[in-house]
Amino acid sequence: MLASIRAIAVFTLALSCGLISPVRGQSVRLAPQASVDTVPAAFASTAALEAELADLRSRMDALDQAAASKVDHKSLGGQICPGWLVSVDYLNWDLRQRGTDFAIATNAQADAVGSGSVHNLDMDRNSGVRMNLGYRTISGWEWGLGYTYFQTDGTASAAAPAGGNLWATRSHPAIWEEADAADASADFSYNVFDLEARYPLVQDCPVTMQIFGGFRWADIDQAFQVAYDGEDFTDALYRNATSMTGFGLRLGAESHWRLNSSWSLFGNAAGSILYGRFSTHLLETDQSGGNTIVDVWDDYGQAVPVIDAAVGVAWNRGPVQIRGGYEMVNWFNLADRSMFPDNIHEGIYAPQSNDVLLDGLFVRFSYAH
Image 1 (cartoon, rainbow, N blue to C red):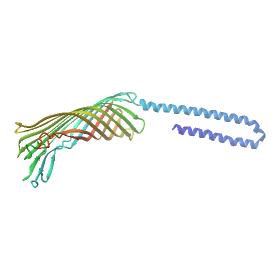
Image 2 (cartoon, rainbow, N blue to C red):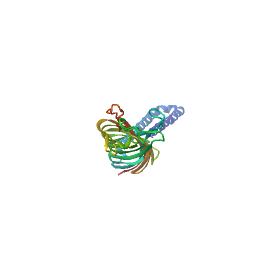
Image 3 (cartoon, rainbow, N blue to C red):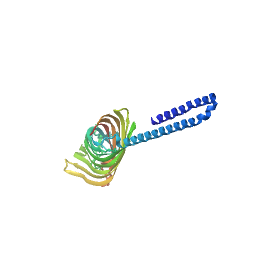
Image 4 (spheres, rainbow, N blue to C red):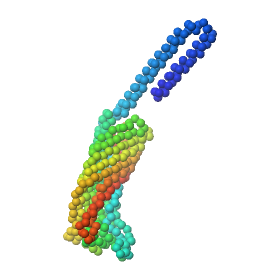
């Protein structure tokens, strides 16, 4: 805008100078004797025009500096009101992971395992909550504490087909292999705290961007159990429980594309690396708990990377914002499956780590005070 004004002003002055020149030329043709007298006046007029042009340039430079200062002031918080920030999210997540098999139902037309299918337990989609409390400074920095809670469970059953087999995939192979029925259940509890700082890299454009980072602490409990009965089993129970407590760092970015004064599209992505301390318990009993087959504890530590991303749409009106969208959170090496795979060397221990993916819809209500 300022560049356009400058161009128009310079063009106008140039045009003015051009209009004066023909007049001077005509006066020379009409009165040659007067040209000598008009030279000082012409020089005076040119000097005045140059002075006016210099004054105009200085004023334009002052306007440019004022505009740049205003933009810098905005980017540093000129349009940012300091105060408290509160948000509450409703989560509707699903949990997906490998290693939830508990039985294989097959026919008896093979020397070992016949034709059939693997039975897995799928966890139920469930609701959760995420809460954030923060403070925004005049410079644009935001400091906040967030807490996310999610819990889900699931059940599944399998029965031996007529004339076929139901193989137990969780039991120790040295004792039992086949059952008539298997009933599996699992539960998952998720508690995550985030202490983070945010800063706006781009604030005054249709596309805005924030970077954020901080400290993450997690406490996640999982349990998987199967009740086997019939054939080799008599009211047997298999249970694999895992508890993980971890802490580490998180870093990410969020961007908004403003469609108008009220609506915007947003997207964010973040990565974390935590040190997780795991405690697992593998228990297997028969005869309603009267006969213990396996009872082993295992404590260990390992890295737990996490990546998460979300996209959606936001509506803004004054201090209120409502946003909704879809998000995915993947925890690497979070789920533990402890097992003894060998019926010859009964003490061979083969734990496996599996990823856990949490994904689904969310709705957030935010208020800035």
